[in-house]
Image (cartoon, rainbow, N blue to C red; front, side, top):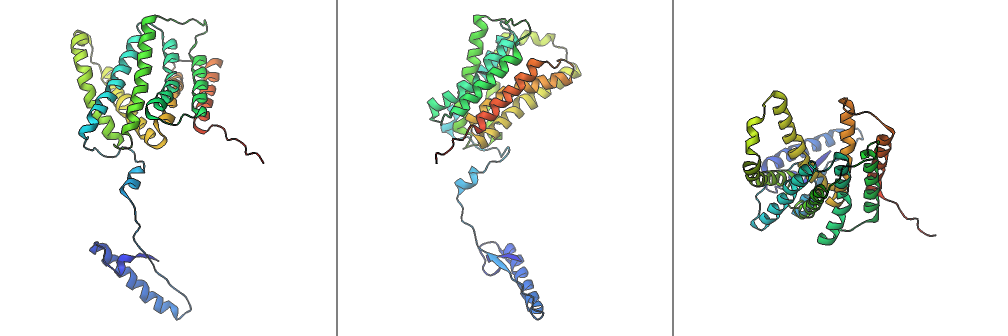
Length: 304
């Protein structure tokens, strides 16, 4: 039977000590009666286990709890939200007025290559060659999936600049996130950036797009789509990204953005909006290969 040192000495937990003391006495009486039959009964009284606060905080948890933001970290949160979602979404969404979805997918796929380099430059993160190699492989897979049968791409300098803005902003987000993720919980980071995001996006909406609000038809489908976007594609996605980064590191998690087109294609096929093709299957296989290479890489054989 496993008991506790609290059974024989109170360490500030009277109710717990009383319960363990009762267990200790009960097992002692059983040991006396069973001993007559040659059966030995033992109780192990475990002591306290020393630990530090830092060790507890290193243990990843899912969403955690809301924490108070330190004043010194407010500029970091402002910059974090400026990079993403604000500038990233502006660059990605407005670029679609000038380029097609295929070219946009290829440009955004460069993020897992740029992000590790930015983390290495600004945060001195270790830059493994398997990360870059895996990212390059996944980009090749994205290109194969994205190119239409005719091989044509709609490209313009305006759209290219906007997509470069999205890529640079996404990298900036990764750099700042890596400085906050070990200090704050995923729910604290996500909630704070969403609140700050209101003050970034709302003025732009009121100035540039307020008139279009009157033309919106608020159907059940429109409202449900808006709710799903807010919960899953915004809050949920950022929270899961932060949680994953807390476990694996931002530099490893960033490459998984190239898995988004795979999920998009699979969902579109189930919804009847896409069909399977050799290029899509080949592209998916190559992207997955790139993801695996980035996470595990190759082990060098030791010379005998």
